[in-house]
Amino acid sequence: MKQLVVLADAAEDLEAARDFYNAQEPGVGEYCVDSLLADIESLGRFSGIHPLHFDFHRMLASRFPFGIYYQEHGDETRVFAVLDLRRNPNWIRKELGKREV
Image (tube, rainbow, N blue to C red):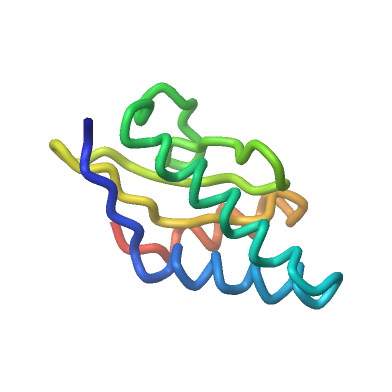
């Protein structure tokens, strides 16, 4: 099983998701983040099987419209971004280009 590392930018993405969904309905933000974290934890066993998008593997979240972007480095899986897939694909590409590899 690979070690998971959630980088600071990805943690900020999770906080932004929490804030967005809590603004829609209190409590939904916590559910969203819990769901996304469960998906991220599954990468410990299943990393590397997801298709490549913009030089990152992209796993689709199971309950919310998010993509979890990660790369494998030796025995580590590093999560670089957790982005809302309703955004413009050009914005996603630019945002991923800003993330440290």
